[in-house]
Length: 90
Image (cartoon, rainbow, N blue to C red; front, side, top):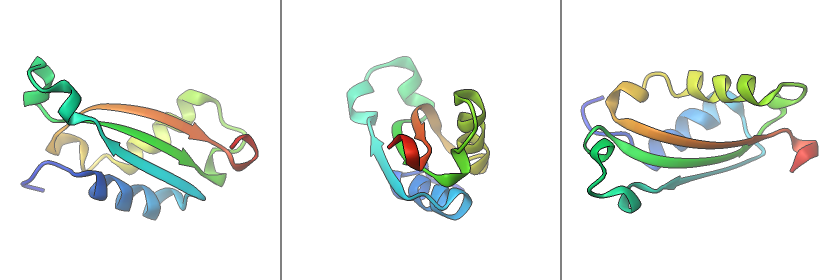
């Protein structure tokens, strides 16, 4: 991928990998203009509810999200805030 990942790119990758019941991807990059890391990539918030998270602790859920985004990470995701829930927690 030549261009930096967008919220739409992240949304698409997560939908394919985790089949979420609910998904919101927010681009927070404009809030970090001037921050040294902003040159390295975008800042995003992901709120996701998926059956795949049932029975998993927070770190395991985050690993699933990062694994789903592994192809996009080197292209320019600098920061990723994740809220991952199972359907019965939503």
